Image (cartoon, rainbow, N blue to C red; front, side):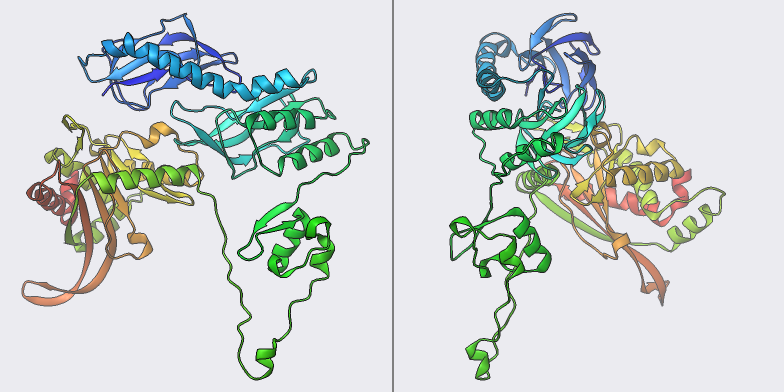
Length: 537
């Protein structure tokens, strides 16, 4: 099905873009992660990558031409697909929708600038669109704090999109006067992210006007504006108008708590619902926490009955963009692909001896996981049906082998891809997987390094897990779950001896991989794992 690619917003102030160079032409094959074009924004010339696969069917903006953000840039779809309706009748409707969408997006900034005078040198920075599918972003880390000097080109923050965590640089120089979205918080595209300008500038009116017109109701923002004014102009006396933190309770409805009181209560482990506030409207303030004394033994306990003194407690953690995307994709896979599982147990004695001998080579160290990746890559070349992908109108049998290796990170799971794994040596695979795993945990993988897999391996053996099953990483047709190597009694040549075995589970999409096909793949894989020297032939 054809995908319409619109002119992306590649900077926070970009309203239109110019195509400097097309790196693909009509009729060319396009893969996820390929660079489609170089686009000149109001700030710089940037590479624009494709998030879709297919054939480039149409180019709507020629080299050197300029068009507004969200206007038709290109169409990608199946070869020879009829897109005349999208170019003629469809585009007018699309443009109308995009114009409406653009007006809505730009409205807060325009209204803000129309209703309040923005001092000279002050720049309002909004949440940028860092990918063509991005609808909201999460600030992973601020690299600057209020009051810091900012130079053009410096990294302001790391922003987590639906694709990856990316560095966001400043296009202005000045002082960071205001932060609108704290680390860990999410906001829609074009929400107020920060304000940069000369030190000492009062930006509270800008913040209030922007938030009023944008419909924002976050209570902490006036506090941030006041704090910005205090830090940047300490001689100016500012009346504190910090909004109280609101805590929802089951019995009393709302409790109003000052931020300092809430912090003190958290540090002391005090339940705020047990404190009676002495501030305005019953607001709990610092002195209430300092003077609070926990209730003593109740009358029921005085007559010998035990009364538990504990309290129910929990922590809430906002879902990261990564966690949201993982949840969405796994649910789609589980409920759309008919999964079935094939379980096997391999003899690992030869594999253990092979690895020990291989690692005697100077400066060489391979893992069992590297051996499994290599063995799978070779087996997939013999069983292309398992190396396939399902689409609504066709099945794709991949002749190349790109193996995704699942890596556990704090927020969930990343799957970097070892490209052409069947052509790589065991040390090359080992080096690639080690590098990917390290950069995955520090969130330094690029989107291109996590795209294009044709098969996936998930290994929990290093955590002592003996066996498990996984959900298919679509559009792949299968995923292999690898367990721990277990030493146990086995029967060899009619004798019970001590042996080493490993359990594996292959999850298959029944739309593409029949049971017999999956079983034949596992038989081939067994030959490589139990006789690993054959992988070197």
